[in-house]
Image (cartoon, rainbow, N blue to C red):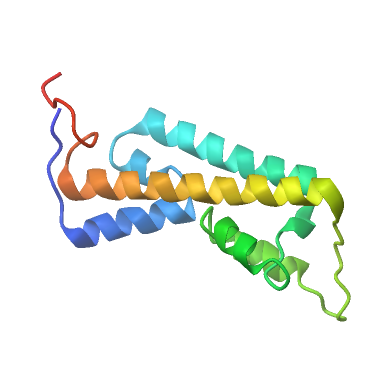
Length: 138
């Protein structure tokens, strides 16, 4: 099934809403089941990372590269980082050791997966194709 192609501005809009709420771009484009799977998968993986490593894994000061990967999951990460920032100079949610590292990895992988889903939604929005390559008549 061929979908109508849209403007580049629409593709950017789809990418933005896919970043804010993972899977929302696919839902808006009519791929409801795919969008729900993406939403549950990415949010579940991110939440699991927070559960394993505590909320302290969101650290924009000492773990800048991990924070960049986590920000790909959603801008909600910035709200979490603002909530966990030290007011008195002492980190309010200390987290160390193996659970901290695993939590960082899970949350950053959720961000990387969301980046792939954002690109997929933008591709569908821009070209009108359901999947890259392949036979569209099948």
